Image (cartoon, rainbow, N blue to C red):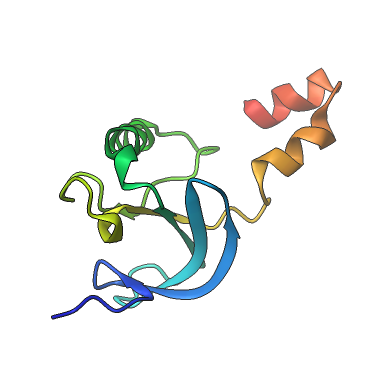
Length: 119
């Protein structure tokens, strides 16, 4: 069965593109299995030569457990064939606070606020 262009893992359906960079596209996705009903984000890695780095990223995220760290819901990194671009994705809940790089400016020079957020 051929993979549909806007679906990943037989489970995640693309709703809209959130952003893109030279390394990845980020999409809003819905969970066709309905396990997750909240808005989710799918990161699709563009460069198939980054397999090792992508697998390391998935492993690192999967080992982190903290209320202030967005958890990993699904991924393809560990079962993908190296070089298979359609299999390079990870899924996380949508962090309603927005892009972390945008938040940095809000806390520049405010050490007390940074400590509260990071705690």
